[in-house]
Picture 1 (tube, helix red, strand yellow):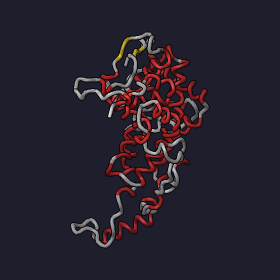
Picture 2 (cartoon, helix red, strand yellow; picture 1 turned 60 degrees about the vertical axis):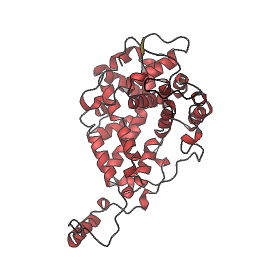
Picture 3 (cartoon, one colour; picture 1 turned 45 degrees about the vertical axis):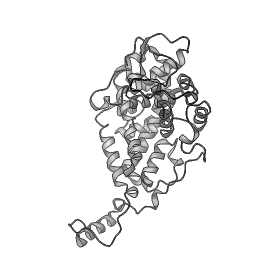
Picture 4 (cartoon, rainbow, N blue to C red; picture 1 turned 90 degrees about the vertical axis):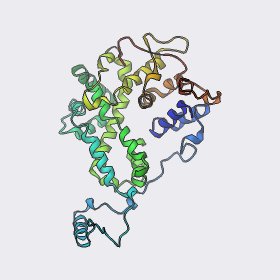
Length: 344
């Protein structure tokens, strides 16, 4: 399978494509319809019955105490183990998800950017309050607050990108050893426009870590919607704000500058006349960075960005599989350029 087909599949699994955009990509030979699960089916997300699982005892202190007493009496933790009760399937257990989300969110808390952004909108006690403020803000107010914050501390953009990078959560949901209704529901929640589209999540939403994720998802949507405005109305300053964040926040950072580079080429250049700037080579990117950059660029302007992609690539003959042959990795139908004032 060519790289471009893998990329389109990735866009689809990350919720970066509408059904209409996916159908366009199928019609223009980027991918087969069968490679995008659910495209040919019902447009609504299927309902996930997470609540059918055995309730997690953490939700009821009395139940938890009773289970602890039963453990002691039956010797569940002894060498012989607990007998007489079938072990609950791992896919129905919310504890692994809660642990993963707790670790994911705690790794972001040392970076104050989200709290700082919320504070420019209203008084916020913590990052969750700030996330709710960001989600509730009018687009113009959010952009004004974001610009003011970036002017004061440019590195904020990279910290916010780290806060809103949910790829580790997507990956958790896709791991085979997590398969089950909990992973299915979280995956659909990550892709949904609103939590209400994901069936019955009552049981899952009792988990504090999932409640925090829901707040973060709402803020993430508002933040991503603000990025095209930075490109259009703050283009001259954008290069000053593309500053790598420090420490652990630096990992996912390269995808955002590259997303803006893709948007720049899509909007400012054509196949015959590239935009002003120095040439950049996407083949030098790690595949994970390229995927994340294209997902972000599609969210900013899918119609423009898809014009960069090689059309009808599936109708071309397969290149010879050689380690030095870039034809299999071909994605873009033109050279890419970066503005002279930006660094990627």
